[in-house]
Image (tube, rainbow, N blue to C red; front, side):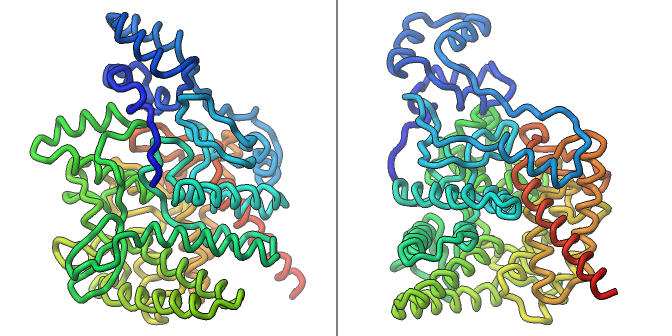
Amino acid sequence: MIAVDTPAGLFGPLFAAVQECGLFPDSKTFADARPRRAPAAILADWQAERPEGGEGLRRFVLANFDLPQDWADPPLDQRPLAAHIEALWPLLTRAANEPAPGSSELWLPHSYVVPGGRFRELYYWDSYFTMLGLARSGQQQLVENMIANFGSLLDRIGHIPNGTRSYYVSRSHPPFFHLMAALSRDASGEGRRRRLGWMVREHDYWMDGAAGLAPGAAARRVVRLADGALLNRYWDDSDRPRDESWREDVALAAEAEARDAGTLWRDLRAAAESGWDFSSRWLADGHSLGSIRTTRLVPVDLNALLFGLEQAIAAEAEGLGDRTMAADYAARADARARAIADHLWHEAGGHYADFDLDSGAPSDRLTAAAAFPLFAGLATGERASRSAAALRRLLRRGGLMTTLCDSGQQWDAPNGWAPLQWIAITGLRRYGETVLADAIADRWIAMVEAHYAATGQLLEKYDVVACSAGSGGEYGTETGFGWTNGVTLELLAIRDSEAGRSGDDA
């Protein structure tokens, strides 16, 4: 991993003073601010002046930094939902950027689409679902640009960060790049070899530390279980407060006095790498954020995605004539599939689950992550059928809830998220569980359409019980919104296509 300067590192005591006094309601605001001159000069002036009180600090910050601007919703219009989403793409598209010196932005060579709201940069796993909608809208060049942007990050950094900010570089996100690569229409040998190289590089990142790892040991993102099975966990290479949530992390460490602060912060960061920040899934007691223990769990979704990555590498290597590489990665995929079958299945509950390293058994908590092995094609027919029955317990009026626990965290009940709807729908259809898949799709579309008709907005997350805006977590519900747009547009297109076929049959 390359070394990068984050705002906390560049501005040290000034950064801590701004964040810990709550100068801005959202900690991410100052982390995203652009310095107007050299960071060292700004810091030296602050240390010389030491402005007193919140107002003095505010004047100093406003004189030396440009604050970021949030996404603004377009005026309410009467267009059908699909047409509205297609009109949003240009508003969410950003040109190739040249970051200001000292900015937390990372350079990207091509245009890209941001989620919206406070999320002003390119995000990793969000982008796959956004790209589904871009491809459906005929925005193929943007799809190719985003694949190339992620490839550029792999070339320069060695992995794809959580997002394109310096403070995200110490972690990644759920590894969806192989699925993005499959959306490319560049069938040239050069393009295929380039994408294969990027996939191998991502796999190397996730498997770093695996060589020589003893049974029962873990290193960074790799875990070897007692029987020798090799699986992965979420991790972050830093154990400091998150720049974008500095105030919250410092306060939580003060409250959780019994915990080592570094371990707590790494577990928070690892949950951010998972994309599920935050959820009862990671909490020892199911409710208190101070009990978070992400790094002690082997997540089912992560390992299903890495199985998909290994399969994708094997298939593309075979297609390009490298049979040695193909056999190697096919064997890795087979070994991972056996490990998932043996360790990430909760027999009594009838669903896939995370493996708890401390108890030595799969968790009994049902979450929407249980759909990922179906999405990846890992399930037997019998386990797929039982998984469908378990996932039905999460179904509500607007789609699938994320968990059955209402903890106040955003990746919990009663919230539902577009990417998890897509994973479940696609996985269930793969195994012929079309009744439940169609119910999820129909309920999600109906809720999103109704909310759009009432407000003109598409949201980051929804309350699928009340069919309203989602809530909980560290910030308000954002609008825009990249992955909701992409998944909803794709589901609308599938619905219309199926309706057309039914009409033809009639």
